[in-house]
Amino acid sequence: MKRAALAAVGIGLLALFWGQSSIGAQGAADADQPPVKGTWTPGAVKVGAWLLDPTSGGFAWSPAGPTNADPFQYKYELQCHLGGGDFDAECLARAVDCSKGPNGKAGIPVVWLKAPAGVPNPTWSFHSGPTCLFDPKPEDLLPRIATMIQRQFQQLPISAGTSTAQPSPNTLRGAETNFFASAADQQFDISILAQAVHVTAKPVEYTWSYGDGTSRGPQTAAGGPLPQDRWGEKTLTSHVYAQTGDFPVVLTTHFRGTYSVNGGPPLPIPGQGSFSSPPQTVSVWRSITRNYADTCLQNPQGQGCPGVAPPPP
Amino acid sequence: MQTPSVSTTFKVAPDGNYQVAVQASQQALSYYNADGTLNSTDPKPDDTGNLMLAIYKNGKWYVNNIQPIAG
Image (cartoon, each protein chain N blue to C red):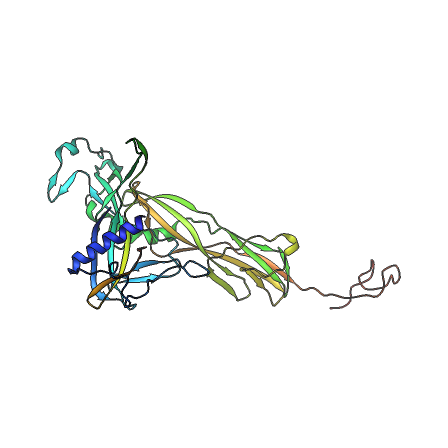
């Protein structure tokens, strides 16, 4: 219903834009009309979205679908600002009190606005506020925080989570050892340029270093525990050791973060923060299978029977 | 329903379409019964960014698709 209405309005605007009197919807019977690009296929729905390429100004289709992309862009404006040098005096009288900031400095009341991401020159609508920014130059505060947030993110005491091996602490050479990661969303409150910044970190990808010179990842699969009767099965995160020995396994968890300034909207932190767990030792043993014709009652001196020395390796 | 921002570069993309970025703004909705009483309401949803894919052929504009913009 809404999509149909959107199409109708969009076509109307298109006609206005180019001054055309004939449009696709009216020319539906035209044999030259190209097939409509559907996103349905017999077996599945193709999911994706368009992403703006800032260099070309064009849009590129992202077939997998950006899982963590925020569909909005944000900015703030001074509260009661009418444009230019004009302020609404009546509004200012009721504006939020920002006089008591950190270090006794006064702040500036702002409101946060949002608009759909990727739309050039959008119309902005209210998001949240009013809230205070404590800086002498609030107009460029956010870009300055944005340049610092990535380094701050990498320095946060984010826990990489834990890696569990099945079986553990001992596993067998040549067998599938199942590894899985447990990492949680984490939240931090820090201060940047005297602003209260709330950071959330969400684990998105995992890399295992198996200690035998091989690694897996980064990949989105965290793996999961197997019931004991299924140990040895191949999983998305399992590994086969070719040698015996003790191997230090290190899990590196890649986090994606958002930050929010003084209670403002969550803004994406560019890139990922990577954090590694302390090494966890996995002992890889070998197993030898021997078959015997007799029981220990029939042949008490047989290998493996009580009191019999093991054979030389 | 309004489209407060509509823009295009007038360049044909590699897939052959012109790309038109449209901001769609749906107003709050009120549904009324036949006797004039209010039945239910939908609040104003967030504005959305949509990409209209159009071609120009034989002197006419055709809209091939409208799909969401993620960022």
